[in-house]
Image 1 (spheres, one colour):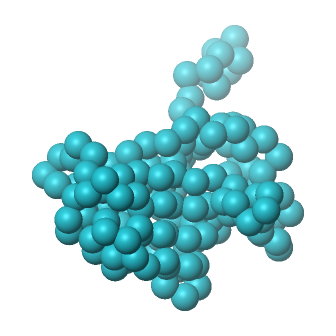
Image 2 (cartoon, rainbow, N blue to C red):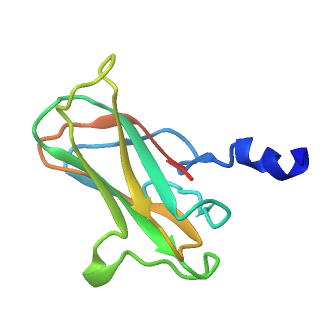
Length: 144
């Protein structure tokens, strides 16, 4: 009987970092995977069909201008990646750099995102809008 109910109490959630290292992106600049930053391809297929994504950064000049985190998805084990329809990101998190922060670090969690049928995710682009200022300490992870 105990063996039957033990899985009910188990924690099957995981959290994985997309970036190999903490990144910086300058004002009015786009960082693309493989050129401006290196993203891990994260296999989320072992989790549930819902994920949350957390982004964190330190803006040099908090402003009502956005920084976008755009993610690609793969349904075939990472052989091909899609950014969605008409070139839009599969998942996009847009944050103004002047949102409330703790010790000037902005940390936002987006989701839950339904990723049914998706094998994996990776960070495709970081787009810092014109006037947002340089952004440092950029990190992002997925919980699934």
